[in-house]
Image 1 (cartoon, rainbow, N blue to C red):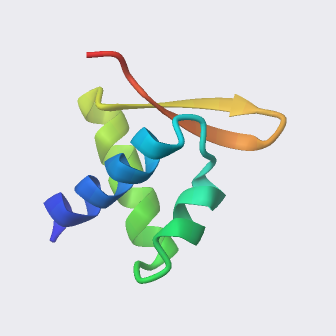
Image 2 (tube, rainbow, N blue to C red):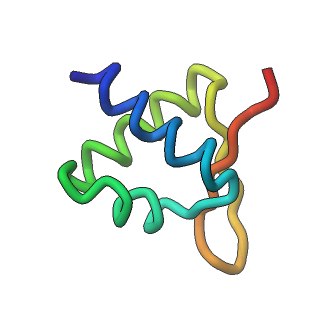
Length: 65
């Protein structure tokens, strides 16, 4: 389940590299927002996702491999 959520998040972020956490939850309506947030945090800790704070809120971007 966790890998499926991660794949869905990464697909959204690849399609829209500077999406916000709110954008993610809107794109992934079948998932609870807390599951999305938990997985974003796990991906951030693994170095696969980068979070930055902007005037729009927390923005997610893929970390260059």
